[in-house]
Image 1: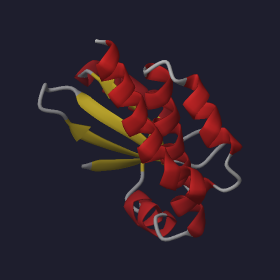
Image 2: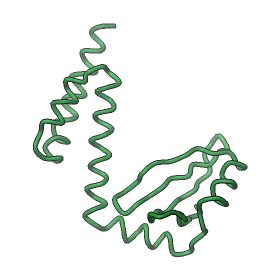
Image 3: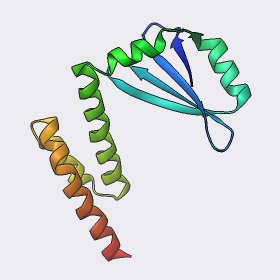
Image 4: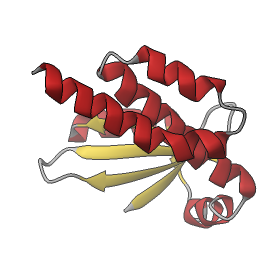
Length: 128
């Protein structure tokens, strides 16, 4: 795995790994956790790296330090929340997503999310 440093106004670390289909997965990490990824061909990866990234030997150490911070843990929870909302919206259950929004804390919302998702899936199965 090769690690890179993003040459933009904000700080990010990228990791590139070869996928089973031969393409590359370039994942972008920030101090508050993963922020996205791209799947690229060899040429696309070369262009992306040449344009936006600098190979940075200590990027892995930076990523390791970030992963031990409270901001990182909160970022991971925010991603879990977003994934739950995305699942509910995929199932057409915006009403259940809004229930998550109404909960006062992120931890409480994440505790309720699996039950709401189970409910939405079960109801979707009844329809088909």
